Every structure is written in C-alpha cells, then in structure tokens.
Amino acid sequence: MKARTLLAGVPGASLLVFFGARAAKLTFGFKLTGASTAAGVLLTALVFGLVLLVLAYRHGAVRSSPTTDYKI
Image 1 (cartoon, rainbow, N blue to C red):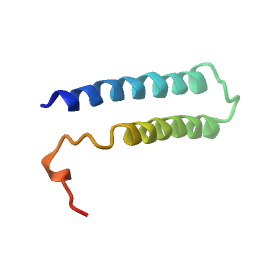
Image 2: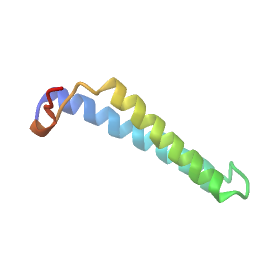
Image 3: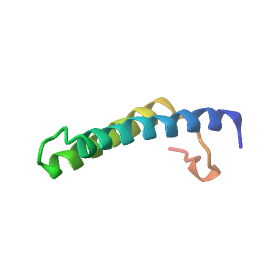
Image 4: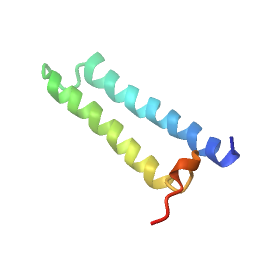
C-alpha cells in the first residue's frame, strides 16, 4: 500500500469516527434533539454525509485501487 493512500485513509477514518460518533452520542446519549428520534437520525446522517463530502473533496485524487483509473 502506498504511503499517500495511508496518509489519506488514517485521518479520514479518524474524522469519521470523531465527528460521527460525537454527533450520535450528543443526539441519542444526551438527548440534544429532545424527544424526536427522527431529528437525531437526520442530524447523525447529515454529519456523516458532510464529513464524507469534505474527505472526498480533500482526498479525491488519492486512488487506492487500480479499478478507479477511469479515463473521461
């Protein structure tokens, strides 16, 4: 595995766990959204989606698989 791939993967997984687990803990553990379970699910999904969006934008040029070499 290339060093560039590892340098993109480790912080990416760390950010997903840090922000995603924190959002889930705040919404479901501390009842930040009140009695609404749907709001907690939506907030957790939005946090995971935004983190993935930022990581894809930041590390989009790093390819870890030879099958992702598409010529457009």
